[in-house]
Image (cartoon, rainbow, N blue to C red; front, side, top):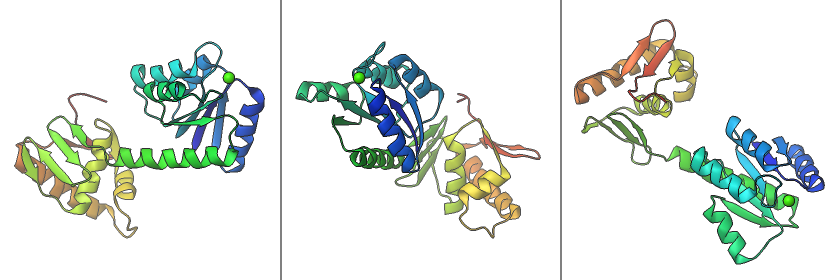
Length: 227
Ligand code: CA
């Protein structure tokens, strides 16, 4: 995992840094709230360890800005010396996912980060995708296009879900093959024929084909609202 530590107590930060690196994680650290927030919004992390008492911008404020202003839902594990119920509730209210009171065991920090990461991945994987007239529910595998139900074979569903995850982005043929196929035996003829089935089914249901062929590269799901 790529983990960000935001902690002004350098001894604690160094301990966390060394331990998490020794567990095989890729770790970045910031010693104040402003630097921490900047890192959190400009890079992609799998988890953030956030101290509440920070110079400049408090951990609570940082968390609120991250959630509300930047719309970033990276799991946040708050670390603090405070252990009153009010402080814990405030942490959750400001958007933290979990809470650890100092002093804590390093192994517990890692275990909680792993649990948060797993839960987050599950949430992302189960999120209903919506792009213009197209809706996909990963839990029921139902696809609605212009109010019509679309029935598709499993591989076509995987291709569509991948393109819906980033509308407007061009996916190369190789990317589509490796992401949507488990089987290395598949070749680009198979991709072409699955793409054909997918596009024909969508056009039949909704009256138009929302997928564009990018010649020599791959395919793109067109979105009126570009991501
Ligand atoms: Ca502190």
